[in-house]
Image 1: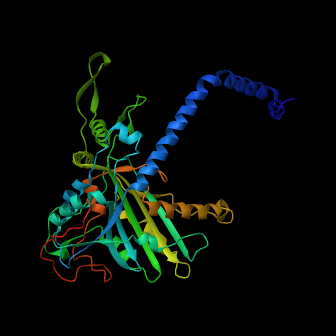
Image 2: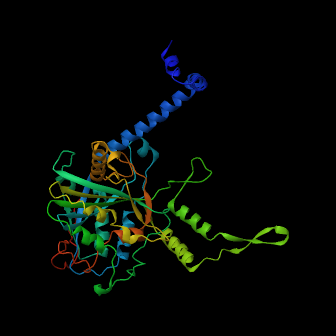
Image 3: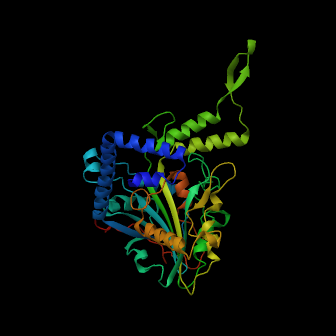
Length: 418
């Protein structure tokens, strides 16, 4: 008796017969589908290898933007700045399949180091000279400097002196539905009197500035020019863009009403009459898909030394994007949180330590779109992106918020080298 007969002996006769027939079919057809599977597996492994090699050769740089005491710019200025971040080059098939070239991405980071709040942007060094003039053109009084990566100063391990809590974020509805943007808050114009402004980023900055010694909060917003990634219904391989999905959604919302005609025939007589609220949703979607779009991923981490770790910080981190949520359109919800609801879900913190390790490593690598930490991105327009990441005016008066002591006259002529 061979090992297959011994294995099948554990099953009832009827089930054993079905399994035996299935195994026989696999054995007979194996010479046909086996090579196909091996080929597909080899292609996938090759793609992973060349991408990993390419990314290991990329030189990254982190810049810090320090704000002046007076800044009356609307978040709309960030939209102009983000247009330069919309890098769509995929190069030729040879570069992608043989050299591992991938579309570049950027990391917009809002960080608190023991209550001191900083704005960072991480990018490939080759884009530095092109992007700096765009920043200075919209914010001529800021100071920009190249800094060392702050994540290198924390050596987190399961048995280290540090503990962490982290989460990622997803949208609550399909991507084309917009979040509550700065235009909904009335910030679409430059306002000189900051006392009249209601800036949705202010609660985030206040929260970041509230932590103390041996505590840190890291927030990263990873962005890449949007690509066709939505599967077209009824098609095997065809994909559509975020813009295409939004156009289809608007068409569905405005779908013509069915009106009964003569002899029971259904006629499409007129467009669906939308309520004022529905009409506003459609207009917001159309406004969003009319702008540049980015594939995005958001990840946040609270770190502290174990003697300073405060569990009360967790709700603030999970709800740090709640002010952008609406019940009739879109919003953010936490995902992949490094926590469990009940103690019996995790034996001796084995799964919890793995979650924390992967969250920390993924943040440090700024990995979201490609290996080693691949996630499904969501799409945001430049308007939405400028809402969740922009430079606030004097309305944000957190004492530890890092601003330039005095007003700078103009952008420096000696921009950082490539």
